[in-house]
Amino acid sequence: MRRRWLFADQLGPHFLDAPDQPVLLVESKAVFRRRAFHRQKAHLVLSALRHRAREGNVRLARAETYTQAAGEPLTVCHPTSRAARGLIRRLPDVEMLPPRGFITAPPDFVAWAHGRDHLRLEDFYRYARERHDILMDGAEPAGGRWNLDADNREPPPRGAARLDVPPPPAIVEDEIDEQVRADLDKWEREDGITFVGNDGPRLFPATREEALARLRHFVTHRLPAFGPHEDAMLAGDPLMAHSMLSPAINLGLLDPLEVVERVEKAYREGSVPLSSAEGFIRQILGWRDFIWHLYWYFEPGYRAENELGARRELPAWFAALDADAVGARCLSDVLAGVRDRGWMHHIPRLMVLGNYAMQRGWRPGAVADWFHRSFVDGYEWVMTANVIGMSQYADAGRMSTKPYAAGGAYINRMSDYCPGCRYDPKARTGESACPYTAGYWSFLARHEQALAGNHRMRRPLQGLHRLADLDALVEQERARGSRAP
Figure (tube, rainbow, N blue to C red):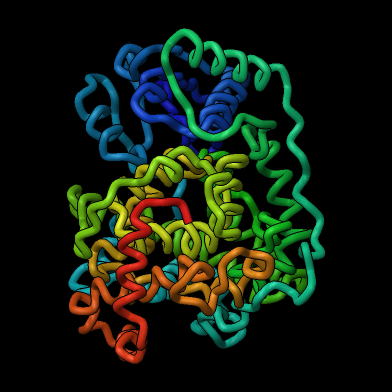
């Protein structure tokens, strides 16, 4: 049996043909020279590789490049980036197998997508539910409804500082983590390798055992409360009832199908409400697979899409995660969460970070690269369609129905950030003008012509011309430029 080369996001047993198959792992320093990754992301990846290397029949090669390490006949599962796929195709004696670590197979996705003018998550999600018999009662969806989003958009509980759920079990670092931290310090001192974000105790699983423990705890203790408040934000509770499993799944420590099946089993046994089970399964079976397939289905140039002509570069305070430079309470807190943890749940990513970047006209490719580098679960395949298509609407709607632009009213409704903030979510101009409210109307004014044909934007665009202070607002936001709000 040929040795199986496992990339650092293919570390689980489902990437092997047999438990005793010999394994090659490669730790490449060149990866960290090319980009300034979050320090905690670098730590997590190296810790996961080195923990996996402790298992039997594994050879860990430390090399400057992958090419230097691949010196024998190997098999490898289809990797998750075009660059890695191109490398494998150039190497002799390396056989590339179909991808693993996702639920819907590429030929099935291509057959589903063929001939469709627009690719929408809801359509793919229903297809995947039926195709894999997940949350189905015969030919009908469980509970008689495909989509329970309407039940899962509640604001945070009034007056609560935290949700009433236990935190996930803490990670206990070991000697491998200690050595990883020492090596990263040395790389910074001696090799000129740089990172962003703060170092800190490891917060996410680096072994399958840790990942399974997190999964069991989530399904038992946190998933029941997940659904209703999955879109809500609390300044004092960045985790809410979210699973925090995306880093472990994206490292390959968990098979997404086993995650989905465990969640469905909990629903069938009556320990988890359908709204929470469906909302979570939608994220894994639906959104995660959808984004993965779009990365390969769209042309390689998709990452450069920029239909709204956003040309500004990321300002230094944002690129450096300088949350202390920001006065807007929501943006400061979320940016601090990225700085300190390398992780925030999906609503701060989309409606605080991505929303602000789109309003300000930052270059979509630079925004996608920032998300890739700054999040512990960020990879090129994760962030391309997520950021270019959904967050920044740079593809003019090829995979989403409208720009995810919103003003301060949305943040005020779905969080506790606005009370105590120096800005007023109702104010468009003046010293107390909310940068999200003003930025929202400025964004619409700037792109009115491009958005005029979108029926979901008809009402906001009608409201634009009812603003008596529109000219002053646009000038105010032009003057703000790239200054931290």
